[in-house]
Amino acid sequence: MKDFWKAFGAELTELAVESSLPAGQYLWREGDPGNEVVFLVDGEMEVFHETSEGDGRVVLRTLGPGAVIGEIVGLDGGARSATVRALTGCAIRRLSIDSFRQLLRRRPDLMEDLFWQQTERVRSLTRQVTRHHHRAITDPLTQLYNFGFFRERLKLELDRAQATGDSVSLVMFDIDHFKHYNDTNGHQEGNVALVKVAETVKRTGRRGDIVARYGGEEFVALLYGATREEAFRFAESVRQAVEREAFAGGPAQPMGRVTVSGGVAAFPADAPDDEALIAAADANLYRAKAGGRNRVVAESLESPRA
Image (cartoon, rainbow, N blue to C red; front, side, top):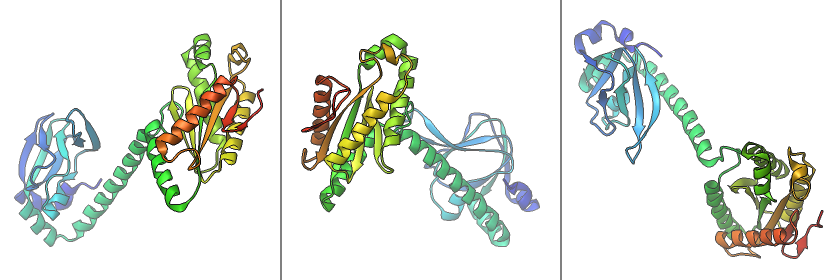
């Protein structure tokens, strides 16, 4: 980062007021009036957003010697957009907004430096937002989408299908006798099995399908544009792939291997909305489990028992 204190040089020595900030003290809080620009001569500060509940914060960046703080507010006259706090004892120089603006009029070359610094901040924040969003919608164990994201997308896709007349199918999977697998092999191996099944479901699906961990040992696949028959073939491919997969402790399972059962439902034939579609797929999943497991049920379509 460019050392703006050195860039402004002697001009700042005359205009800016020297000050200090002890470790832990706030320079300003989000929403405070933007009445000055601060140059960090020595020490470290952090810039962060406080959560709405007031019980946490999201750190946006840390600042070191040479940083200029609050310059954007100084140009647009708005309120502080984030909170700034000293991480260590800091030596600073405070410059009033009016003096800062006058200085930039005399030194337009510094505007370009400020522009590039702000551009890098935006890029950094974009990367942070992308990472936070990914974590918010992803199951940390399987790396599939989580239940919350699936429910949001299901409603959106059904709204779209309602408007276009497209079909949408839903497939729910459940690992057979998973409690027995956990009890026999331990939760660590159970987690390994969950990840392997998740990878199999995702690998078998089409690009663009929404595959999520529904909860526990259950998974769900949202297949936009797929008919009931296409969804059944997908589910049957998953069932067969899991059946062929080698799992540690698989031979000790009641069926001699790790298997899954599946239930298929189609919109709008089986259900008028998202809640009913989930219930229809879940009902077919229950029929598959009750019918002997290691099978897929989609209304009258059923895969042969292994």
